[in-house]
Image 1 (spheres, rainbow, N blue to C red):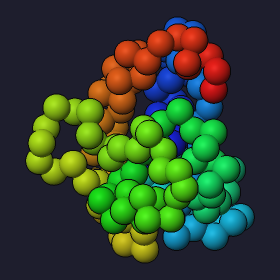
Image 2 (cartoon, rainbow, N blue to C red):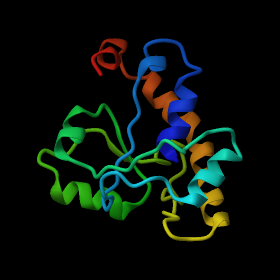
Image 3 (tube, one colour):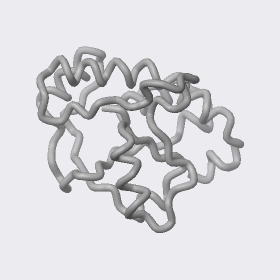
Image 4 (spheres, rainbow, N blue to C red):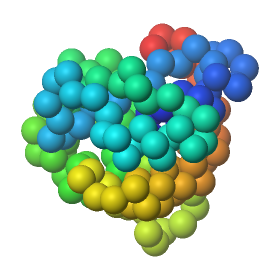
Length: 146
């Protein structure tokens, strides 16, 4: 959901942000799984279609190519820090740029009811402008290199 929301927001930005590609990968994902029905429903309610989504696990190759790696929870970030070599320089929580020092985690709703997916979606929606602002502070030549 987070990747789709961020990609949607970037589509409204000028270049080079407009052309950034956002990928979704999970620390416990298997390759080729569709989005959960609750994720599809939660995103459909905000006009984003996840029907074509296919899961993939986090790999070192993805981490090495990434400009920015965003995690929902501290445990997700911990998993990347423990397994990646090297650890990405820009490894952050999704809500880390909001200015708040509290409640930085977004609960992972995997396997929960629709309202949990909607709550996580809404927290991501609220955080996206701060991620866009962070990306706007990265030099354009760095952004174009991705």
